[in-house]
Amino acid sequence: MKRIYYSIIRELCINCGACAILSPESFTIDNNKRVVETKKYTENLDEIERIYLAKKVCPTDAIVIEEI
Image 1: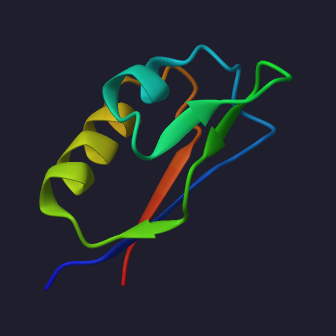
Image 2: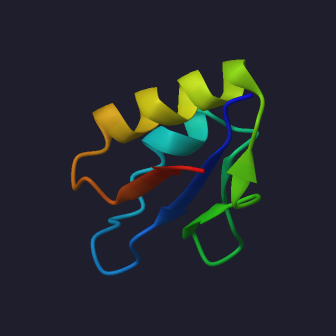
């Protein structure tokens, strides 16, 4: 079973929200208009695919993914 850990590098994130649009179960925009992770890991293959897509379109490459 595939499992990934993912996070946002705060110093790089410009809070564009692309990740929250592509993978809303993994990323959201908080009350301070900052993108945050809704959790830190997943085993759901559909969600993993959307997280990789979010990483691909991130304009500052602020999403880190580690397979565990």
